[in-house]
Length: 377
Length: 103
Image (cartoon, rainbow over all chains, first blue to last red):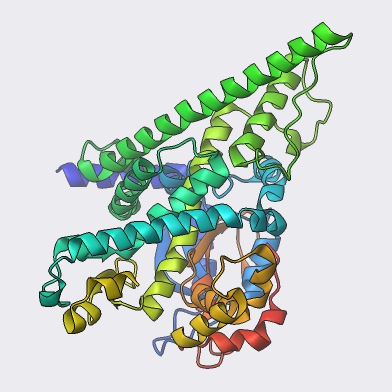
């Protein structure tokens, strides 16, 4: 009865979400497009027979088609249903936003990710990599006191590593250091993101079945990820607020000094040079926010273009959430796959679930030679 | 593959931490990264919806059609890749120069 009620609510939400007639016509038109070939040969544009939130759903794997779609954002909008669901892990940042807000943020953030600037971050990345490797060696050495009897089949839990968790914790430390000045607790963040992502698939599946009512259902699969996201967002908000207060305090002090030493007025919000170490992601966002607030207080920006939409505190929090997620996922997954493909010198990688939950087992060196020092070396 | 990767790292870095300038000399390392991203793109697909009637790949699409860009499919399409499912870093010696960014 409950499920039936939910399903009925979903059907009504679909019906009233859009004009039914135009939707039917769209389905009819798309039905002319070839389905996925049973031989597996893919056409440049094909359908698989499913719909997405009540809309016909086509697939394009041809580079020319992908190029056309990506080059014409006004013709092809971000699919609202999926991107609404993605907001639970991404916030409303660069990945999920569109239009003027996307252009404004893209323009603001592009210099931070210039390759020459990333090269300058290399020493800090190496520092974190060294710390990580030292911690792994210490862990293996301390756990392998009686290594002569250890093989891949009886390795103790303390010697079993989950590659994705290890690499994601590393990339989270790097992202927090270089993007956010080390202001977040990296270990806590990594744990919360793992928890959130583990719950994301059931959340997404439920949302696709039950529609927009899913996130209001009082069940763990719906409410658990929402609670975790709220905890992450609260931590981000607290940190952003503290950093903003510190920047304003520094500027006020500098302004007071200028007034005391000579005539003039307080300088506008000018961020540090973009090649300085101080100019990280959060600094850039906060200076844009302070500048925007000052312009609003002075009667609005002279620039009326859509790229000059006012920046808000929530915008900064959303972008921070996006990049914490993106920094974790985009960099740690390829690293994990590389380790899965090659394996570490002293370990065997067992790939499970497309390598994403691969586990490392201590093998061969321990079992054959029984030498903990050879592992450390 | 692993031996070759290690040899390049040893030869270029000589046991020291890498500098930004040395990254360009790690050609095989770059190829391995590209090949990994080809077979395991972090975003396998991207979803869009048509805002108005448009033509795409020879088909006329009305407004309101969801179109999923299959990045991973494009990366293993035999029309564009030789032995697409094989992990072959050397393919990037010739294909790297043909990359086009358009987003």
